[in-house]
View 1 (tube, rainbow, N blue to C red):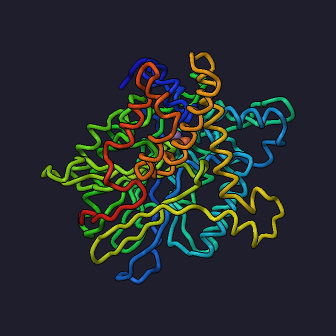
View 2 (cartoon, rainbow, N blue to C red):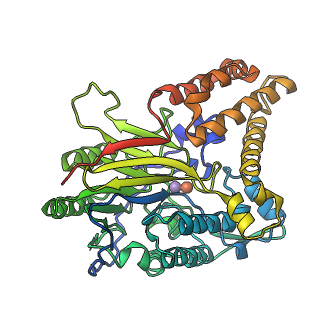
Length: 467
Ligand code: FE
Ligand code: MN
């Protein structure tokens, strides 16, 4: 389970995917070693719900919450945000408040957060976020979390003051357990001894297998947060034991983990999919675990394996919900019907504007958040494309045209709606110029968006296996 540094495939794509995906993710390295954690298994509290009624719940991921106290809006923070991957860090607090408010209004039974809860694992961010999650639970929505690759032992934790970045205190795995004990761990039916994974009864007939796929034991030694994920052999065994327990109760199971089970892009990027995704997929298929909720890639994408409906193998789905921190700031709104075992999934954008009005905010960016967020993301993509095209042989006008095309494409791609706009994007003057670029990046990019067209990336209806 040891592999060498793996920067090659990402660097080949630096002009391309860098524009699309998290820059932090591309700083990928692959080393893994089991990280032991203590585990106890207190009794679970049964949810008080009518056993025959469908339940509604939400899944959000990559909230990348940054505590307000860690930034002063100064030069260092501004340039950090500008050089980043499109996260709405200046309004992290407001965005989360809007989510808490919306949960209070719409009353989903529970909220799943599938990792990268914080920007870079800052202790202050975890503390503030958990305070908000406690308020959400007090208002009637239970919360279940797992960590992502940014949340634990992260040496990149920073605060921003004036023109300086300062090292900020971060948390370790024990701190994570303590801070998030009310968000899954204390209610768990069982916990894995070798990771922060647990299983919980979320609703009548529905268990959540909350998997910790992140590797953080060596972050401080490496001096960066390890990007790639995997399931330990012992965790796979533990999963198998819990699937058998679920079978005794004829429950259905949804599996949640930060890293992807399936490939969500045909482009060769390491660190998104589990390192042992083949082995895990095989195990999940055998165990009838046919729905995974993931995040990490920051884009909205739904895949199934096998892709083709002609294949006799029962499909396994992986829904990668786009990052809550990134435009269009959406989550998955889901239902589970215990009679038919049917699950539905539809994306919904957090209504920051509605929350801002009700809360009497005067900041125009909050009152017109949808437009503000879209423009900010578009400008970020445009500027990234322009800087990457800097040394290319194109004229200034051509570069601008190409950057505009990339910006439009990114807006759709991250939202999961690119397939609907391909004709429109192909008609843009910059599109042909991208196609002329060496390496054929644009055609690869377009191909990665079209390869499973016809299947929605923003909604799904499927039936869970009954164990
Ligand atoms: Fe992330
Ligand atoms: Mn991640």
